Length: 240
Image (tube, rainbow, N blue to C red; front, side):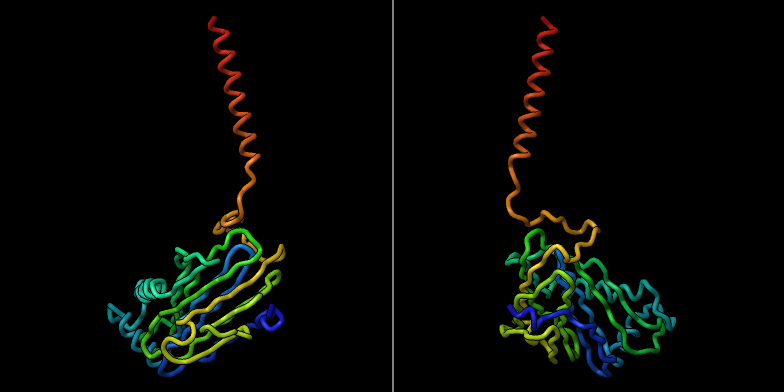
């Protein structure tokens, strides 16, 4: 295991938006019953300025919430289509739980902006899991990409690979279109009772767990059948 090399990830501050490129940041946070996936796209000064002019449909010099949502919806569909996820070897059917467009200012005469997409990937029961990610997203003027593994209490990383090679640290960066994540990222980890399990109803603790014990259900069915038989016997006796 390489849990020592992949310890608790420190908070990572994104570098300031670039002038000419579009950068992306992926952060995966394994938890007791799920993985939190955060996918952030940052449009640099030039890219952001061009996007702001496109979003200002009514040409009033301001970007209303409804106008900003157009960009969020576009990236929601694009990234969800080109981002392929699997848990324990099973491809996931998933969707973003939150999409936030961060303008900083609603002025059209401004620059950089960002879009945050958040998903919760349920793992179900079990103490060990494997997350697989393949990212085929293509954005105009792609610059820096960054992948971060965020590890909290009760989670032990057993191994990680990126682009088919071992990933010894919690943060990896590369530049340009594609990169190693287009080949694939895999994270193998174990959880114990200390791992976070939010009480939000998104993920069920018994989902994906091993076979359930059958005897409580069989016993309940037997008791119900005996009660029904006793009721029918009493009913026939009264009719005689």
